[in-house]
Amino acid sequence: DEQSLSKLQNVLAPLKTMKAEFKQISEDGRGVVLQTQAGSFVLSKPNRFYWKSEEPFAQLLVSNGETLWVYDEDLEQVTIQKLDPSLTSTPVLLLSGTIEDIQQQYKVYSDTTDGKTTFSLLPKETGSLFSRLTLYVDQGSMITGLTIKDEVGQVTRVEFKNIQKNVEVASEKFQFNPPEGVDIIQNQQ
Amino acid sequence: CAHWGAQPSEQTLDTWSITGKIGIRTPHESVAGFLTWQQNEHAFDIYVSGPLAQGATRIIGDLDSVTIEQGGQTKQGVDPQQLIWQELGWQFPLSNLKHWLTGNTAPKSKAKIIKQGDRLESFKQDGWTITYLRFDDYYHLPERIRISQGNWRFTIIVKTWSV
Image: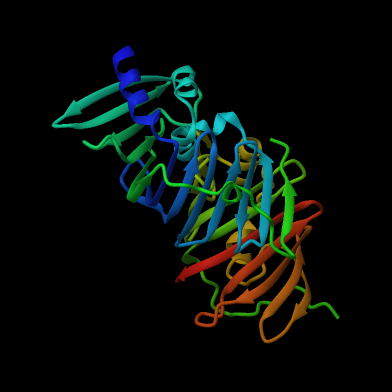
């Protein structure tokens, strides 16, 4: 509803850059853990980010707003593709996107209890990758985590730690130069 | 000379699980993601997730039934390999992979051994070429596996074996 959207705007608008560590757990509908990941990220609006997964496996995602690099050390491969707007259903692009992107794609609801706000984002179109995305914001209007749920009941929970807001980030951070001898794959999508 | 159907290890593993990475290169796309594969006799539970947990795919089933969960949708079928091809567009030699991943040729068809050190290192079977690039030093099970046919290529990196 309108009021929730403006509340979300108040949280996202002042956020120019964000730096944090993350821990991500994916579970199936019965609570069986499918996957865990941990690492750190830096993001800078609009749509620029450096998302480094370290545990249990290394994987690096870098976007300069137009191009997305997915570098996988184990596979010795980097996939390069145009940044796909439909990827906005992924956490990092939501955080680094604009309120217009969000308003265009999601219905936004919110609930505030003792200073903490939970935003529920429901995709407007059907067939989106998930059925509900929930953002958790603390009293200092800092995003502390989010969960993504899909129709089949798979849930991915992402928690942020050591969060730094609006720190200075050099733009080279969002440019990736593939190391020597790595398979470079251009993806058309 | 080629040894037909050589079986490097007598005891064939049929209950195991791995976590690791999978790279799938097809003529039209390249997918790189995290892989969890649990095999229990004929039953399998395979989970492949994209980098940001988007596009996660789960394939559960056994010899004659399969369920694929992806993007919030569930598809069911009786022929796992056929449904995987139809739904995911992957030529995924599932029934052979169960054996190939543990460093063995598949029992039901001929295998042409290309390279055999103290362990089977490379062979051809059912049109696919399977190469073991690295073995883990505890179980001596494959840790880096390349499976290819034409411009289809699977690279599987095993980070943890549990047997």
